[in-house]
Length: 494
Image 1 (cartoon, helix red, strand yellow):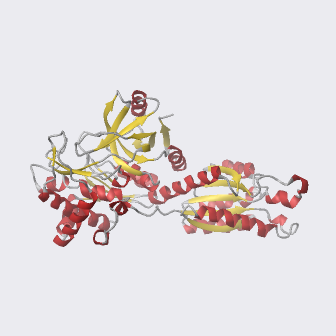
Image 2 (cartoon, one colour):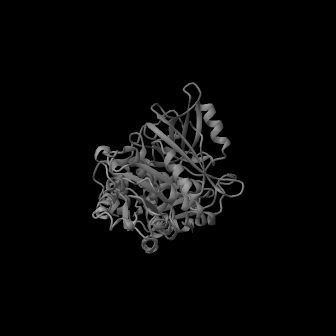
């Protein structure tokens, strides 16, 4: 496998993956009545529109520029063109005054969340020399209320409205950047294939979910997979591939001496070799079923083959998660989707839950056993050999690290009493400091206004006990995503 044999660089490069794709449709609106009156105006407005599109391309997304809708007839044609192009998001760029009839058909027929932008080329008119032509070049906001009104009367809510200048406007660029990140999420959510392998951890009532609802709400497909499928993949791995994978694992992880936990010792070489084979089997499983994510859990029984397989997934699933294919334990498909969203936002998205509170330091440990997003680890991750996987059967190597110090965001995807999806979000800080040497991830999470209030407000919103832990403050962009998806979103931190 090329991802294994070609690994010769800094271990951190193994987890580098290009930004997720997104396709954004863009069109500008104007009024064709102006063209015979003001020669050169149309060409100048198109130049400004081209500049706007280039600024969007700088964010690394694919731009489908449909050009100018300056009549209702052109608007109908353009809407069909953009729908057929399969864009994830639509931007209506107001370059001068336009009747709303030149915009609404495009928005209706394209059928995607639409942002209205009014990016004025001049920060202010040169009042001493101003003329009607100059005014029309800078009339970007004039039809903003009219187009918004037409959308709302058509039961189409604008996803956002961005007013600013075409040049040197960081506020506007930041807003557009966030929408490009939203488009990346919309792209993957509408096309994702998420695997379900095994069953929910018995008694975790918050984990239970109807897979069809994920197909219905997001447009993705949930693929049901057997543990036998994985076993078949593992059996197909060659010994030479296992040796290469072992070399990779030794470069990616530290193998420290045991710490204070008697259950967390050194990694047994034979168990590591088996886990290396299983990790390659996981790679093959993901490829065979063309999966973008996986939720798994299987209890096994008395050392049988399924127990041995089920307890040996942590390394392989962590390698996958770190490369943008999230794997969620305990069959938490909701958290798998939350992890997928966080990864496509460029924030990582590690599998986590609440651990003990440090009341003296006013922080809570957040982490979990099982797979994690190694791409956002603080330093080199550690492997410890666990004689007991607490709450689960079996034994074997487990991954331990804290995520990068600095701003962090928790994203919980839960469901309400009527089955509707809901985002629960919190922003905080990952603090430096020791974590327990237990073979689990743990991060010192500090949240405003204080740890007690945060934990109360978080839990009262009814999240699942798992969440996606990512880097950076992402609440604003998650709220935008939730709005266009029609999902309730609550941020519990100030």
